[in-house]
Image (cartoon, rainbow, N blue to C red):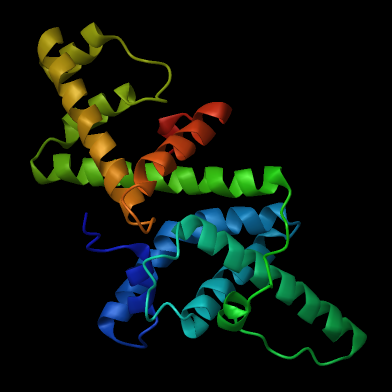
Length: 242
């Protein structure tokens, strides 16, 4: 399977400099990953303004210093890479702030150097913190997948139909009545049922596409999808909030 546009390549483009393509890639990275990154930083005890500043600083620092200008197809899951890089960044940021309080000068260490130093693992995270990041990541995947499906309906002039069908996706609660929804859509119940099955298939395909962009090998896709769904179902997720 060929991965035409992974998030490894997105970071590579964003690292190029001030070109239009790079700025577009940077904007896409921020749009996609701002929420899970900031959520994780908040769980580390930072205030919302501090978390916003650190999220922006991390993304800029990652793009300025990352070795991902030459993406390695064997790096593994983008989610794991990003969390590891963030943990190292926050650890260094904490050390830098402590050094400033002591009046010392803390040398600058880039994410690139931290990522390349062998034998320097990311600080071990409590399982609940890692799971919280992964759950926020899963929500990001779901939102992006919903946007893909919605765009397809909008492009074909079926936005009102999508607004009705959306409630029938897994996680949508409470499940509406087929009869009532069919009446709203101006369809028979059997026709609405067919539309629901079609939309659910489109959503599964969209999730597959989204996840394929965050892994390095085809065999990782299904296990990543299963893991992300398990995270969402364990806590319960209402798609109305996505």
